[in-house]
Image 1 (tube, rainbow, N blue to C red):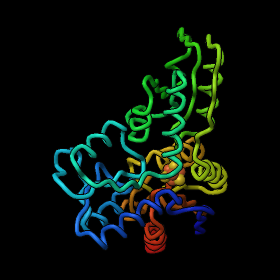
Image 2: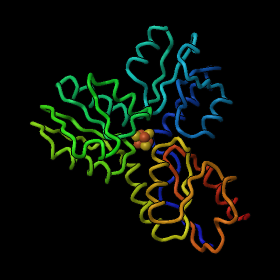
Image 3: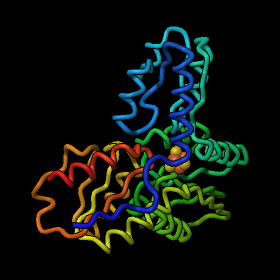
Image 4: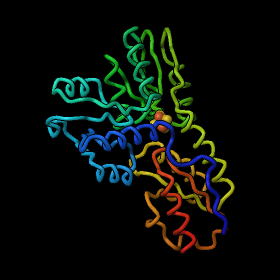
Length: 276
Ligand code: SF4
């Protein structure tokens, strides 16, 4: 049996930066709050909790001290509330996401109807929406197909983890509508794009794909979707989920990870496969 590991795996630079920042902080301070998980990986969040990070869902739980902004950002209104409470802010938002927030704010100031191609319930998208007076989220082409939509000018961006294919499909459909002006920003993250391209290539060369990463991680879910349309695929969070029957008669297995998956999980997966 041969294991084929994707060329690029483990953390992306944005996640690496966020985790490093919080680890450094926790070495100096005993405790810090984070509103929601820092990244979408349960094992790393657990490790940070052991070092003193308190992951909270409700801002009311943070009475005083330091609050970390997670890698996918927070809505502008929430940041304002944090400041009003007198909490010290540590911003671990990925610089690429931050740039996206600035694009949304600028488009909104210039009176564009902002259109975000992405998942409306994802935290990155919810934060992005807060930077515009009026933002519309499109998850799927069916939401606009055969519908009358017209604005004077629209500015289109995408959630960083969307596939290029979906991005292009939605833009093409929007171009059929009645707009005087359309501005399109390619805000797809290059790291995510490279992994999606690699997933396509790898899935063609193997008999089974294992995609490692948090079940809440949007980019890992996209990788699993891409692989599943081409090959038998399992999206796992950890090595203990691998079942013996998956490996039966398989000679080549491909392994790829999301951008918030630490490398040690890949080592554990390889060990478990060898053991089985
Ligand atoms: S995947 Fe891209 S946008 Fe998301 S944290 Fe990593 S570098 Fe930033």
